[in-house]
Length: 469
Picture 1 (cartoon, rainbow, N blue to C red):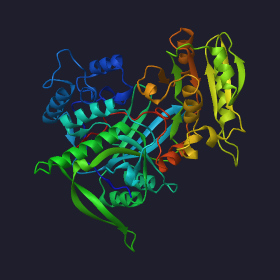
Picture 2: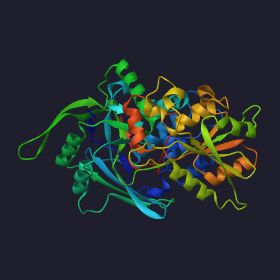
Picture 3: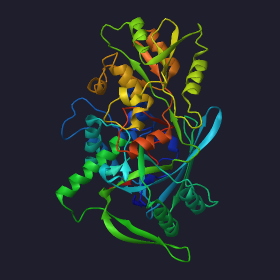
């Protein structure tokens, strides 16, 4: 079902940018103004200038963040700051990071994936998107005709066939990229140009569906850009790529793929991670809430008892028992053998009291959750929280959530408590992480989760490979 191709990527020239940690960035959507300024100062060739340039006073239609990104890209290519791969390649990438005191490795493949509308069921989303962000990304893609950062996606390969092929192709040679960034994460990447290995990976992926983990705005932007280019008609100047149309295995075990030329804009750069990779980590995203008119914490606690059991946990003065509370919340939410995951939340409204909220077992979710949603969606922690608490008792419906006037999303538990204590927010809801199988089950049924349902950790950095279109 999924068609993947090698890409002839652009990479930083070591002669011009010897230290990659000085020129790569986090994804644009986690960069605030202060971080943007710091990245600008870090190195004159930092990819922030292409991916997420500054908005300057006096910007107009002819001089703006997008035109400057295009000009910088042209200059960097001319001056060989960025150089093209000698031939199309798959990129085998390992990201090593710390989690719970241990070093963990997440393995993946950076490649091109053929763009398909969601309704075809080949590439599936799991979260809603915001029009404003897509407009920004589309303007950048029009100006630069390139993918600067990949769409992070998942696929199911229990036998880990794709990983084995890529590891074998990498062999014992040193990685083409190897560095440790300022967060202590180590990055290793091998350029795989062997036609046999590429064909085997294409064959292994041909029958699989792809689930977008992070980068929904980038994927939908690429779809919109593809449609624009198709409407304008093909041009002799269009960049063409060699696209595998079908793959098979000969009796001798060799992979045989037929190919044809295809416009590069029919593809988007993706980082593909196996659902069964031991380094696949999802963190919870908590909800800080403000601007609720007439908010009364005591009334809310009483209202919650309609559908939840409510247990009070006093906080110690030094907040040292917060992690103990979160551990209890995690254990309560874990599914037992033969049973489903429990809907359990934490609540803090100030006054040094935490509340553990557990959905009463006898409640029939199908009867109290939206009737047009499948059971997989109705059982999601984020869906239960938003429907049965945030909408029902706080009056913050979908349209208000989209305007970002009431809810802020965070992974920082102690910081969230402090924000409530300072009066910046009225309350915070703590959640357990969404399970990977919940993501794929909801996506496979054509549904989308509420915004910020997942936080895949760590984020993939921008700047290892650029995909020209």
